[in-house]
Length: 205
Image (cartoon, rainbow, N blue to C red; front, side, top):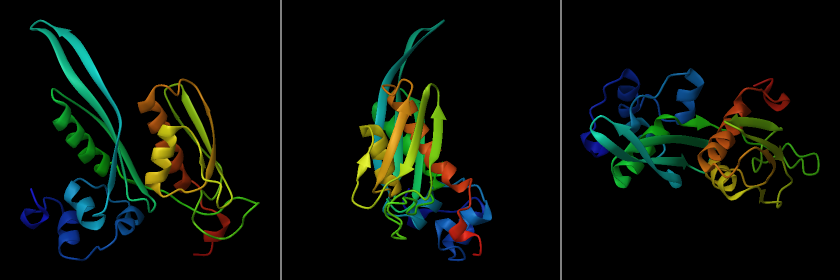
């Protein structure tokens, strides 16, 4: 369904369609849950998408062996917003599309900044402070890096950081990072945790 045919089912959707809310950040500030993917498509139209992992999952039932594809997708606008989700369906294509939809509904803001004492440029190229995330056995610590450092991280973490709009960062990891879905989720949790702390620069805002 195209956005032209969209008929909002929630009050938030109506507010977005009518132009009362014009920014995804305003929704996060109000703490309103997003229940319609069209809200994200309207406010963040240029969303990037990446396949993190696709697995064939098998289960035995009374009807025999059932096989489904589990897709893990990450979405982000490279401007401080990131989402991740998994979906399990019988075909790869529908599983990927459903995971993208769920990832958009799971969108979270990322606080960016320049927390490196070596840089202090005041820009938003890195994270404002050290942050941590954990999923399963995988733990990741993201540290601010000076401008020009790039992303010193594993490929999965690089993908997540890039889609979030983080250009420079150091990372430390532990656990089974070969489990790509957990690695991506842990990185997502670390980025989401940047909004658990209000940095001094924003105290008087």
